[in-house]
Image (tube, rainbow, N blue to C red):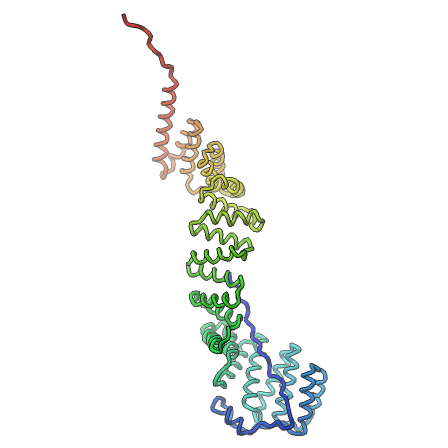
Length: 442
């Protein structure tokens, strides 16, 4: 019922760095903020952009701002040809090129450039290095290489004292795509909770992912409150239908029926399967009258196909709600399409309820002819009854005699035979000529 949508998380890549003539990343600031045991890298001197290249990077940045990628590429190629670039300069060049490749959907090229930065540890700020590790995880995820995406995302996670909500979600999604739902669950929960703690509404895709994890784990009770959040914050028909399906999994047909009825009343149920499901649910809740109204309207509106299955449901709903006259047409249509005689037998019962004996007799004959009845003996009893009501005593008795062969109804059949014989005798007695003796004694 519920189709899981593949979750995709692509965060914004590192923005190109803005440069000024005074740009300098000092050792003290970097080691104080970034080196407190959060990474295995040793504290090293952080390099800066040298004065002779500051103007070049400023021009590259201007080209990016103007979205003049051709000019940016030309400037980068010229700068990259310099033989004496230090590591931070090489890292920024690779970052720009990686962004260009990514913008052109060249993930392989982007990955190659970003990995160059990973090899330039000496002189590169730890925060920059760690960010690139996160970016590489995202690129791998975009390539659907979830194993490598998870590898880099987990390495990045270990470097963070306070991981971002997006970071937790990236790790969780990678686990999910690798079908490791037990490891995916706590990561996704942490990501969502971090968002909630900030006073924000969890993203729709994140709640969807959490719901999907619970579904994969068949934990429908925990899935339900997540769906309620989706309905509350992102009201869509699909989430309501999914909630109905969860109630079904939890064996709670009453709530499932209420959910579907609420959607129907709001005009949200527009597909044949949805209308038929609601009608069947109302039948299961002992509300055949409501069921007949729903599927009857669907048939009249052309939403529900006029086939055997749907006529059967409609007819049964009418029959159970004692709408015998209305049940005749759908029952007749369904019975003619059926491969067995069960519906003709039900049609006969409707005719009997309306005291239409001849039509009931005809329907029973068709039922017996098609066969595969649940209780042939009882059908023969009904045949004897309708023929008796038509005063066809011999054929009535013949039907009861046939019923004697069925143990469940043999006693009833024998009693009926006696009753028919008594009735025939009574009628004969009534038909005898009454002779009145007019002789007067002297």
